[in-house]
Length: 155
Image: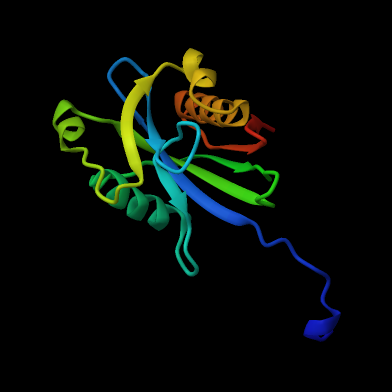
């Protein structure tokens, strides 16, 4: 079979982010200057880069932190209107210490603020699909497992 005879394959955008927690179990959300809603720290994977490496790079660029990422919590198949197919990875960033919190700097200017949010309040900060994805990641972390999700819902 030649390259011209090959069937089309998916070419999703791939992004990776981390869930950071405080000692009360709330998750860290950030406010990107270019979005209308809050999100978790992270961003798109560059060509030839692994999702884990992209997550570390993005957190360094956005928050000026060098995290020791834990396991992958969820991979979510989450196509979005006007963006096409997407695969989103979330890694466990662990619990931030007060010293780490005070070290947060918006290094690249993409973010304008951060705060901790309870799982019950997530819809106030972003779209339902993001809230579902974060809750799926929280559940995976609590269960000591990774999860596969579609549109934020574990399958």
